[in-house]
Structure formats: C-alpha cells, structure tokens
Image (cartoon, rainbow, N blue to C red; front, side, top):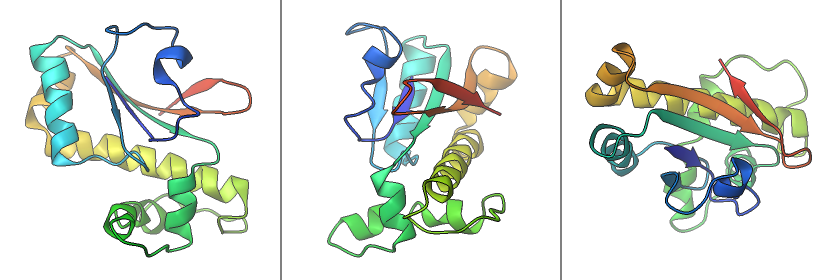
Amino acid sequence: MILSCLDSRIPVEDVFDLGIGDIFVARVAGKFVTEDIRGSMEFGCRVAGAKLIMVIGHTQCGAVKAAIDNVKLGNITPMLAKIPPAIEKGRPYNGKKGSDNPASVAHVCRENMRLAVETIRERSEILRAMEADGSIKIVGAYYDLRSGEVTQLS
C-alpha cells in the first residue's frame, strides 16, 4: 500500500517494477493522510492482506512548494493547509528557506512524509495494532526524480 503524491512523474508501479493488481496506490497532492486514505489503508492491509504501507515523497514537489509559498486558490487552499505542520512542527532546517531552494523543499517534503507516517499510527487503531504485532510495516521513503532512487527514511 503506497501513499504517493499526485505527481505523474512518480509512476509507483514502474518505480517498484510492479504490474496492475500488484499494489494498492493512494495519491493526493502533498501526500497527506485523510480519513478516507486511512480507511483505504486499513482495507488494503486488514482485509486484502497488504504487508507494507509506504508514504513516499519526492524531489521537486509542487504541492510542497505551493504550501511554502502559501498559495491561496479555490479548493487548493484547504488542501495545502495540511502541509504547513511539516514546515512549523518538523525538524529544524538551518539553510535558506523557500520554495526556490531545492534543499528547503526536500526538507519540508521529508518532514511532511514523516508526519504522514505518524498520523497513520496515531489515527488508525487497526494499523497501529497490526504494526505492533508485526503483521505490517509502516515506513516513509523519498524518491529522487533525477536518479529514480528510492531511499527509505527512518
């Protein structure tokens, strides 16, 4: 079960060399966890037998850049409002902040991914219990668009 960004540059099945029907994929710009996504994860793991939940962020994330820039536009506004906790509550970043700095964007993206993993554990009793008994793993990862490399993050 993968939670990925909406960005089409991360074709999850291709990234992991899997075919149609081999993996559950949820996509939302900014890869944050909603009640519906948690329910889908619970279904994928508890009912359908998935053994891994991976939240995967990526370089050059447009949703993260838009959240950093505080974009306000229609339904994008409440969607992007779910990303600033990664900016405000995430681990400190000492470099130049801003959407024009790839290192800053990468930092926020990683923090957003970490918060998504925490949210899954905090807000899904089913998934938390399955992870505790070893039935599943919940991990975060980061995809480099240039190299195609996926790095699991702690």
